[in-house]
Image (cartoon, rainbow, N blue to C red; front, top):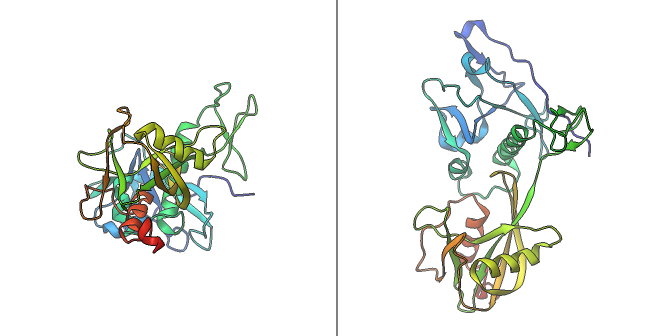
Length: 304
């Protein structure tokens, strides 16, 4: 599949606006700015609109960045260019007065209005920009010989000019599963990396030589000591933290007693709908699966 490559774009200053860079809405419908793991935006942009990008920026920022055009794959970012404009701010660049940086993971709930990110729409394009920018930070040098990579014309790939090795944006498939027992209770687990009291679903990366259903069975067995059956795919979600594609499943409890691994999972329990712990924020596929169960669309109730 041929796609336009990432390249710099020319930006013009408007001398009548006291040093602010004006991005014409006919050319730039909104630029995504990142600084490390944060989304950067003016403080006066409402939380519900930060996924739309920004239309102007101070010259202090504009002079410190290289704008990137990332090919849009789910409808053009705008009809004129068909690209997503984004840029990576230097980590030590102070933000202008009145601007803010929001961790992208934290911003997810603010941006989605309770809608799960499915890879389409403005939030999906923002996730694509964030994923690609992270990969570019980590792919400066060739993984084989250590030489500096070069961008490839007409492709997102980077190529080593010395040994010829090509590198493409990395995507790591991972499963996430809601397990439901015959009492219509769901298994929720507390990971060591979670905030205190927060419970979510069992998840893990697919290993080489393994299909997705085998990943579900193995991760459940390893993390909580249970056997499951009736594994069924439900939905997927891009998850650029840093480069995952989350594949959501449902499964039915088959056998075993909960026995947490103590490495990743600290606690796991069966929960009924009227006795729930703190749950993941809306916008994630984990919350989508939990909400489907809460609505009676997954589990024994759904079969009635």
